[in-house]
Image (cartoon, rainbow, N blue to C red; front, side, top):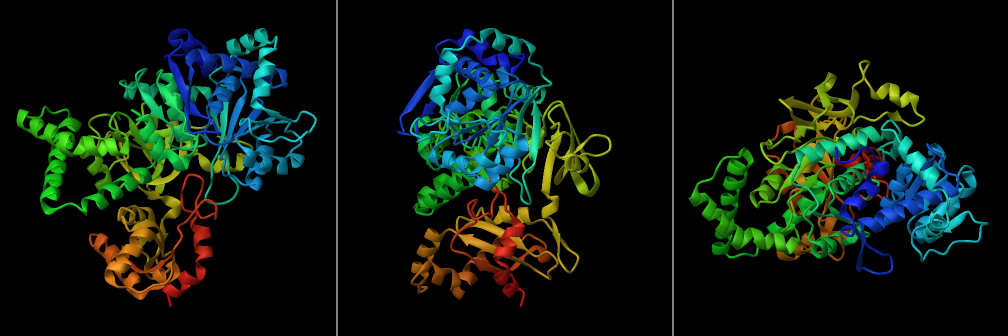
Length: 600
């Protein structure tokens, strides 16, 4: 291992890398990028760690982070680990009610907030949370109230650390840091009920990053990584720890809505993401291709076929391509692939792990053919992110990757994927009832996902609790259908319906901009988006596209009717979790009348 414990890592790396850039970041007040060297990073970690001691933080105490992605999140993480304290991340989009639940359930002592909105929400709940001693605003522009020292700015902690004499206490805590210490409690977003706190320890975190270091040894000090997902998502947090672990520079993207701009500015070599990012890039490229002349389209088709043969048939299998195939690929890369990559901003990319939802095979194959190294994988918060992922070579199309080293996976009843090992959570915080249901008698964690294995390659079929049975007794896997349909550029989101019904239907959120263009070209009269989604011809047109995509499926899986909605599902309306999974019960409740109408 490159370090023995996260409590010591940043100081060790500062001694090794000195003034090399460790973190690139943006301030709330501007889009300009700034940097912290390893020395500066280490110094700030020490200052905040000593400030925690001044504030009375002891080993095992919980400290929350309720903010957008900021460099300070990482500083706070390693300052907490240096004190053997526990980090509790909270989505910046969480409501005051969600915030209050997590603050009270975890018993946190300090809450860091990002900007004014998060601070104002924190003020709404603080009176109901007697254990919460301080609120610390990261953004210097946050207007804090005069509450006798309960509210502080991040800069106040820096000053406290500078005047602290607690160096000996900090050194002692670092020396006593154990791999069995609790590192973090990640609260699952949950599709139903209150979130559950997933308890992760240092041993699992360190093992996870080391196993990835072994699987992807080329990732290192010369890489520049960009954050894509919120740090509250365990996938992004663990990816970032991996970047730091191998000495890479990490660029912290502050605004999720500006990720495309950030990609073009940073030109990352590494970036974890969700399949929807690649699906949107794929759709954008396909739209561009539609405008090409037949001759140019023929060139592109030839290039992609060449790329597929070179990257999937040969390089994936570590077979040596012929000189002619290599020449053809170099021409295809120069004419097509390199230009596509530059437009997106990923021409330097070598490490693109992708997980969190299903990735359609055709989308995956397309980008692999272009030489874009998508490393598709699968995992959960309860498994410290990764259960399986594509290696650089010898990955299997259609799988969700090879099981990570040190993890034991087996297939249980109802084809449920069961996992056991160092990178499985300790349990749910304050939830002995949930823990009893979460594990088998011999200690395997129940993922709730159905799948199968071939060797060490894992294949996912669907989320068990999402599976439903029609009134005719046929099982339907809705996620498979939804993943297929959203590969159509005209379809943004789909919720498949049919539990205990006699046929399958769907709520469909189309790409409204594309749909308006289709309406004009086809002469469908409309005055508003409401008119458009209610237009019989539009319904018939989209249903025909769906039927075409489903023609290879069993007849009982084919969607018979659809309801179009002008505005897609969102976190704000409660239809999506913070990790963008469908809350099916809420969707069915909200659209109950429309669903019933499809079965009249």
